[in-house]
Length: 117
Image 1: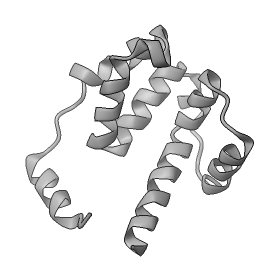
Image 2 (image 1 turned 30 degrees about the horizontal axis):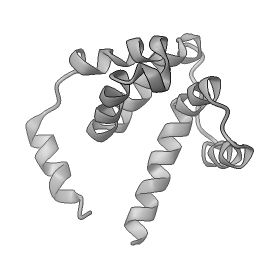
Image 3 (image 1 turned 90 degrees about the vertical axis):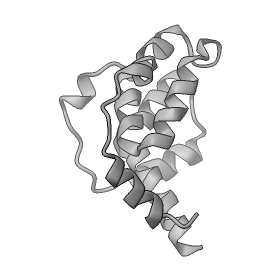
């Protein structure tokens, strides 16, 4: 149980430090309590100035790639739903459908064995 909670905090930190939360805030304003949570969880993280120059869709695409295959799949699904996220963001997320770098099969199997979800 504690491992799962820790993993959720890791995901939340990656999500907040990647710029994805800011991107979502640009599209749909999140409640202030959620913003406060993500601001708190990202304390002490390094911010990349070059990264801040990217478009919101590019930031979200990079964030989802950095969080792993499950989140890439989420981005691929969202790319098919411009009615939910908007045309521009959907176009940026289309990059996740065919331009994602391949990952090592050995690493994938090793990570699968580690997870006891």
